Length: 268
Image (cartoon, rainbow, N blue to C red):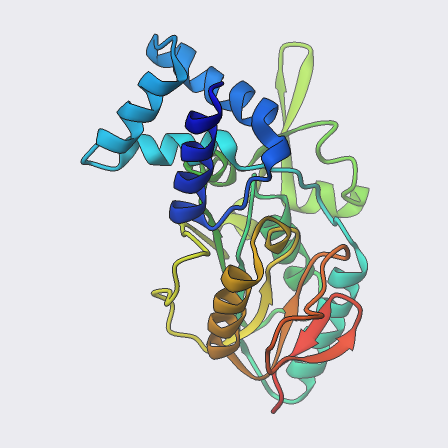
């Protein structure tokens, strides 16, 4: 890929998604963009760049961002967060709260929001409780996986067997088994496409918890600060932000208070 074309892709991706692509990512960009080019029958990177930039409907930039964005996730990833969430829900319920709103900001293929749903449903007596989870991602491709709610056997390995049996249907497809989320999970979830680099967001709040894990590592501090300010606005006083264990708000000016590593709260 010509260096000028690569830099043009880097600038375009940053402008439209907030994702920072380092100078050493040329091979990654070439490989991922190349798949989309083959699907369109385009052989030159510069020609595909022209297709993206000249698309007045904005449909091809969505395809480009789908190709570029990284989606690595698993059920109960960083499981301590879900133990903490369960204790929060239990505590809030004991105080008389019966309405809960949670946002999974970078839902990827759905493992995180479905894990949140299982955690909520498994937190004790669910009678007269109002649970809602918003799951968003910039990638339309992974959101299709979320909506489908179907996972191969190796994908559900991290789900405790009793929960797997309770919340998923095992469906045989030839020599393989697919696990499909039951309506008890699906009914809690709403999936939407959202670009985290372009606040303000359309949600009204207030939210009890926001999971924004393993996505800010792709943003620079300017984008991170805008995103954190918006999350802070949407959270209720005493609400919680969960970030990835490899992430930190150190060096970023924000009003969040540290609770423990990778967990922050909005002061009440």
